[in-house]
Length: 636
Image (tube, one colour):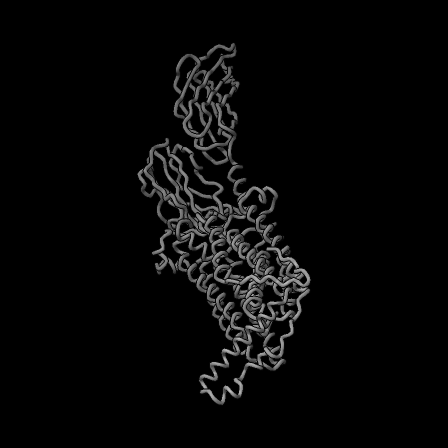
């Protein structure tokens, strides 16, 4: 909503503020955004390679299966399972071995000995270093592909109803943190008298309750969210114990402990601090509360920074404190904005100085957000293709647009703030005039009735006072522009929540590059021509080889031997072997059958993996004359 300055002399148009209607509209919008992005949690660590590769056909059973990931993961028993064609376990069932080396993250499981030929399924499930569950599956074959009865869940880990509820709890936690920290900062730094105002007290307390409840829900749902996807497992004590041993579980427990300290802070803020009259004592208490509250707020923010995006990837040691500053700036700006909205609509006593103080706080918060946001964007995106070609980058662009709109509306709010004055209240409606019942009423009425009349008179006085203040066109315009800011802030917070559960653009691009880098060129028939010379009589000629279709899996191999005169030439022995030296596969022997003079053939030649293969051909032209020739060729 764009606020415009009222015409001189015009009566301000007053629109009633209906809290229920506004809350319903905003909640509907937010939940729509969250549910639109709901579903399986985006993988923040990606599978970049495996041995055997997906779809590979190997001649003999490997001793183990290894998986390579783009970043660190947490694994446990059953994180990597290998299933035979009849859906029985083909691995030893022990916890995967950590085979990581330097920056390469690799895990492997040993296979049972003597596995028969057929198609095997590798199903894996882990937790990314930034707390999000990931899963997947692929197949490889021993000897030759076969039918398989393995049925994998159609729903990825982190999805389903549990995933939706967990995602909503994430948003509610961010919203609660914003209200708690931003509301307390607004009272302490901008409007100290607000500590004794009931609407401000309710706002901060509700922020604390919201964050605490959301954190408990996330802690209970963490096990089914990263595992079975069933609500009943939320109360599995063994699963809960396993969660507490993980970094995200420890972060959630730490948050609950810090919320206990926050409860003490709230009690002092709205108790001792609100009742303190002496200016010097109140100043000292303000300093103590600011320091203590700042430490608690930073600690709560750190529970996100130490367990999510900032804790993994490049420059994690810098990214985590930057993320804490970013979260605190968001809370001070958006939470303070909601506090100002409540103060403008629910209390008649907030003065122009408090509004101007918040304007300065908001400006400082925006500067911090700009600096930390630029760094975070570079760290999580890293390139223009990642900004425009990934979901994370597109959400980031949407977030920047929303911030730009929010700043534009805030500009109108600053204009209204500059014009704001404290409207004088006539003495006839000053609170002191209504604090005691008049003498005539007191003399002829019972004390209970007198007290009731006094309370009614106080309400009427406060209503008159509020009406007078609401008649101020600058204050009315400020309320409308702040309401528009708050509405945009709710949407912005929803987009930010979805952003934190989306795979960073840099990671997605790097994972795609890693997964496509080893790929061989497009499949196609392979044609080779290799001259040979065994050194004996009639020992010179040419070997021609065709491999069709020239891709992984089963192939037809044809070999022609031509003499030095170009005519078909029979030789006593011909052998072929294939070796993929880069993966230490082979040599895989091929013994072709003679079809005609100078022509040999072999069917069902298995190429287990794409890559640059060395083709060795051994030609024997007599009992003692023999030579082996080789040539490298790319087979995909």
